[in-house]
Length: 286
Length: 285
Image 1: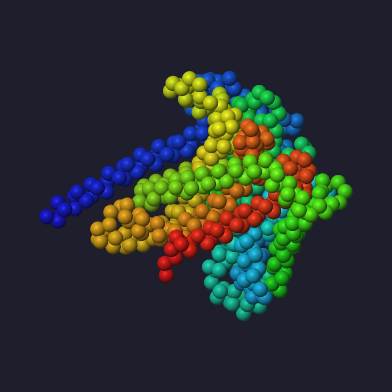
Image 2 (image 1 turned 30 degrees about the vertical axis):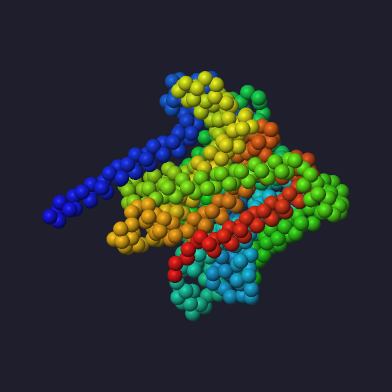
């Protein structure tokens, strides 16, 4: 009796599961198709891109990569280097400055702490467009336009509130007893910060580093504004000149360089998915 | 002592954030082109804004974009999060695949891809011709459809809110569903009476975040329209117009006025969101 009752029930659960997989696989293919198509197009001759929608190229060429690499006044490697310098500076800046501020918010007592914390949360919602004009004026007074500084210095000054917030949440989870034990051993706040909190915060620091890499690498707006000398172009700015330079866009080479531009993000995505997904689930960063 | 730890942050607040906000408030009352010093002109910039058809156009474009793409994005995100939250095999793989576009959706490379996909000879039209449409429109070159393509791009990046929804769904105890189904509630009823109320704080969080994000859209519109906001200003996003005034024409005073107006809109909408939340966001215990 019990068995006959359970059987239809189990069947009911099986069917939607199968349906769910079908929906999910179709959806995933639709989501990924543009990306796969771009990858495949980067190995097609430009004239074939317009006549073949399929993912498998009928004629394969690797020529788009060297052609795109050398199509602009400087080798694409030059722009990659510029991007990497800015990315490296931003990562170092965010790791140092945000972890310092986060330690203060999570572990220290000071006047108006709640007020300052609220201000910090408020800055996370601030559109960059509101501050970009005065920032531009400031940086041009300092003669910093067309240098790396306008893109790195703000990170050294902990302006990415998201990461402070992320680290505050994380540091609050580290047992206070560890701090107290260290204090008994004669450690001051810097020693506690450096020898206890930082080593235990590696997951939060890794999330910060990965997201800083991806955001800075993908950033376009501030790089477009602060870097107008072609010598200083970063990967996104260079890519943009590539499509806008000619009326007949050489799609094959453009897609090849787009793939080059996306490759590091894919790499980090594959390597650090767990961190990325956890980071986004807890804080809502993109 | 705390101030040593906070020194970089305070300096950043002063020079990179709060100082520039105050400065842009000041500049919005001036005529300033970077050369020479700002000249005080009172409310002229704001007056000019309300006589400026491109200002209205950029507001319209941005509002349509936010009002259409954010709800669609959240609906897709919630739907897929619910499908994924059934203990299916391969959850991690699906989640990653759906999340990937939101990681790269704002990049120049993807905007370039979009420009080709929706171009007159692009991927979409090749498919449409293949299935029998003789003369499909050039989506990005047609003022009626160009904004739509950018909306599609934003909806495509629903993975980020989806991951947040997934985390939220995990928090709902299964006993609530069991209790509801014992009381005879069907799937639809369970969705409206258990899932939605318990998830409402997360829906609210995603709504605020994605609205703020959508208001700041720039790269996609800039690349797809070649920096013009065209065709016929149909993709003239507010931020793109601000960029054109400030960094194309070095009309820094006017750009600052636009920036302050943006701050008021985003701040106002966020406030409205928070106010409205009282009526639909449910915080249990």
